[in-house]
Image 1 (spheres, rainbow, N blue to C red):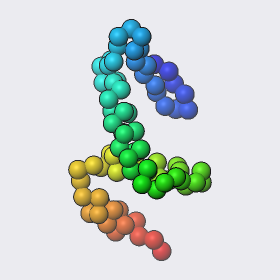
Image 2: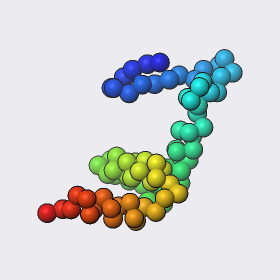
Image 3: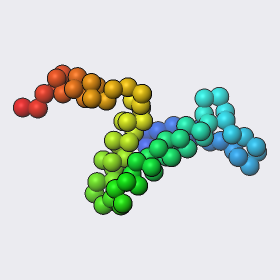
Image 4: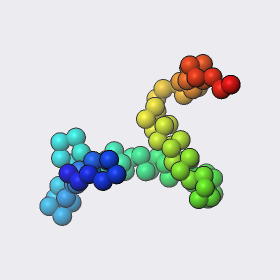
Length: 83
């Protein structure tokens, strides 16, 4: 395990024919990147200033996939209204 920027990284050694270790596997990140690339490709390019925002939106959509995002966002809006 490696710690960097307060994130913990668990290495999977493909050279040792290893593709998963306990809960650490590559399928999750590969699925996320596949989802993200398909979603972002619709924009035909993004400027550097907004890329992180688009990536965070993809992360949010990925983490709440299968749920009604409209209801989740509406609840968040009601709990923290903009003044």
